[in-house]
Length: 495
Figure 1: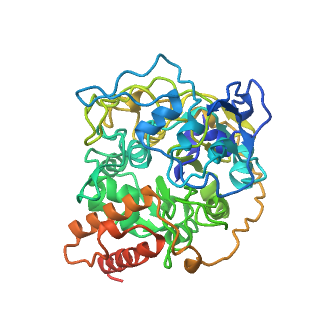
Figure 2 (figure 1 turned 60 degrees about the vertical axis):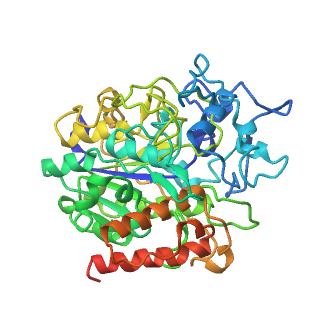
């Protein structure tokens, strides 16, 4: 089987879009593809019914939807999370979730204008997002890939690295007003630790400064590898030009999460915090360009391309509509925390989050493949373990051994054709800081900046940390913080 011919696995993880939102219209409705047009249930709000519709605004949903655990519960079950006296959540209604609460919940999100809530039902068509669509059609699309947790970014990205979020169900708990903020910083082994111990080469490439690299600031056990395994995206584009034998076996790519003077536009596809009348920082075209650049760079090296599998994923649905009810899941480690801190709500991680876009790209995959197997982010861990570590173990918790890996997507025939990707016009080729200076930061961006500055101060006690956490409200506020992070990283690396 050709799975043994895969010598390199590259994962690109974007931000906060559901499967229906990005790839739900990839193919016409039918029994073989569970797309957005297959839904038979509308969302209900204020006595009206709302169905999915094609949206052409590439910044929508705009402003940012709710994405925390309690809000995802409302989106899925069409009712508020009921909290018991001990701080845990009451059991949810009998499965499956109705998936009819997205519009009603979006109506409660900050900055959403009256009557604009149905925008959350919008989806893109392939012409709107031609890069991921062309790649998904040319190789494989996974129409039942679920986020590992029904919540937001930090927890789901912890699962993709460590197979657990150690009981956390939200990025943070505490109050910024009372300077009592606590963030998920996971301290269990990651897939990278296992690869390191086995002598298997790996790298993480990131689009912003090191101290905004989510894997670095949220996974405590990766701290020792700052100088040896973490590299900027400019290094990635150089590394793919070399001999395939010198390229790492496992690569994880993070986009730029906050648009800034130094690293350029935000290209993670995360919706922005409040509505603006321009193709602002949340335009999915910036993410499309990143995917095009990565694919073009890898395929330019025939030796490398012939032995590579690229997995394109989003970490969570970010509050955008999806019609498929997430199924039950295997709890990873038995860690259940009641109350609202640090993870909270007594969730025992026995169900997946909402579906996310997923495409698997390799010259060993036949065109037009639709994989309807149930996957979640721990499927990546199972794939890496089976390919590079001699098989799946329980080293990263119980979810990983229960996950299906991606080996079945790989065929026996090496293709020689490479699809031609259309150019991506993102507008200005430079970051227009003046235009978006007053654009508010999303909660995710603010949390990342605060945590990153905190981690920087802990690792480099004499580093200059600019601005108090409470002042980080807009992209203008973020610029000096990112500049301080870049300066600290340059000093760390002797540049």
